[in-house]
Image (cartoon, rainbow, N blue to C red):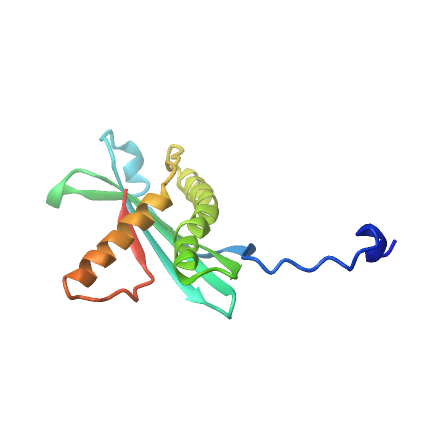
Length: 178
């Protein structure tokens, strides 16, 4: 059946020229798991402390293609101060290539800072959980992250820096602790 027949005899449908968001590829860019005190650490009976560091990098690959890398570092340690010892460290850089076309610059920035990491986070979360379990430790499930709130805070901080005369609005890396 021809396109003309499908459209009731009208002209062929025009392709959408509005904004477009697509996920082109999702992949692991880098991964690391370390447990420096294994196997001795498995006999310790202390309460571990978990520290998470989150960062994001954006790189333009083409006119409408962007690589977004979500970096998550999870450090589990026991003790405090100088007596602290590392139980394990997990570092994951979960990446994706995203197609974004037809967006205003401020909307494009917001999508790269919120929607793209929202797509990548479940993959990073699963990989981190699998690595911790494969390292011989109890399963650990990372809690959901509100990337919209993190992005809004980053924008607020950049605006405050600009108002203070720093003017460094070109940074494409966002970091946060949870």
